[in-house]
Image 1 (spheres, rainbow, N blue to C red):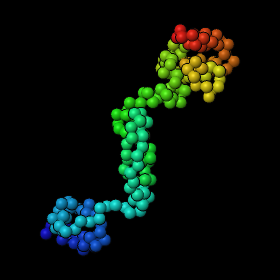
Image 2: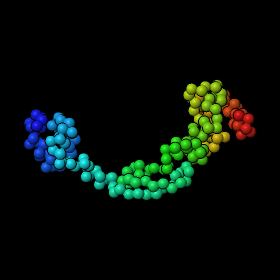
Image 3: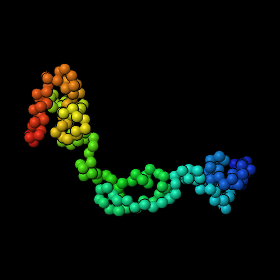
Image 4: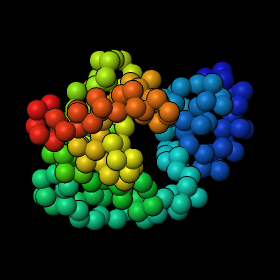
Length: 183
């Protein structure tokens, strides 16, 4: 018999009685899992499940959903109280990655809408490293492309300060050109 197993035989037998996982026993004794299995071939051990945790995650269930991209039906089997069980929205990885059409119809972030429709540079000075988005009509709920104006942080501050008059003509001209399809 292995020396370490001989030294820890009482601990091992007690652990087996308590149905401890074989991996747990092998870590505490300092021998490999296979060595333990060769000395105790009949011991299957518990599967290492934490019964309380399994209860928290819910029962295993199968539900049918419709893919948000291709509208095909797919089934999910898993524990009911997990995030992935209810959050899954696509039938496959390829549908999840090919989301351009989805975002065109469901864009909500004003910056995303702006960069899809305007060049990412300040319309006053041409700065393209740090660019902010200004709501032309000052209504932050209006995220239509013709209401979004790309400005560098400096010129965006101008718009919201007493220096607005210095650049407002250029901003007005840009918006009119954008509405007319010239930009």
